[in-house]
Length: 123
Image: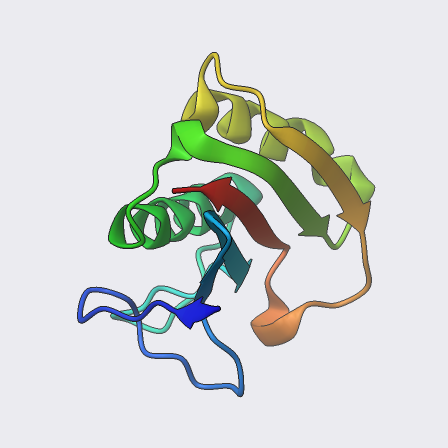
């Protein structure tokens, strides 16, 4: 098991690793839509989804993987009525690649975010 950290990854504030590699698989911790520079959360769920997916994309690239190597994504949203907006942005991000996925409606998320997502990919 190996923790992956690079200078390009945002600094982690909690007691967790952003990426763990084991057995050729990359496990990404949940990503919330807090801008790593401004520390602000975008207003719309579409903007939040774009930010979450861009953070996932960065972690994948820094780990030697890519969005086309994602096997599974778990998406947590605060309201199931947001599913259509999230799905539209998600489909645009992945294109023809369709990882296994689940969308889980949850209560409140940290910082008032509307979405959080985690992923598993291969190297």
